Length: 101
Image (cartoon, rainbow, N blue to C red; front, side):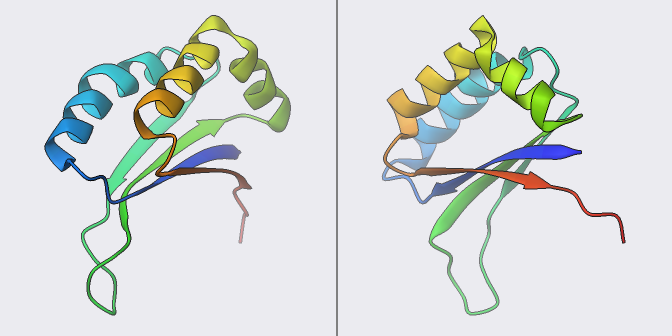
């Protein structure tokens, strides 16, 4: 399983961020063909206290190929455009592979 991971730093206006993320961005992203599962985690702190990060989203795909194909779809492009518009300065995107142990 392959994950596209979006890690968001603390937004200036959390209420505005949440409103856009949960009412606009997440519904667009959930429509991406090939997306198997989407998990969103609110970061509430760290072992050292406060965290620089606010939200983590993990989007699961069957393979690198299915992720690549998903990003080429209209829905994938719309999600990418939207995230850059409302959070481009606070988001880090990563691709990971789950390991079986």
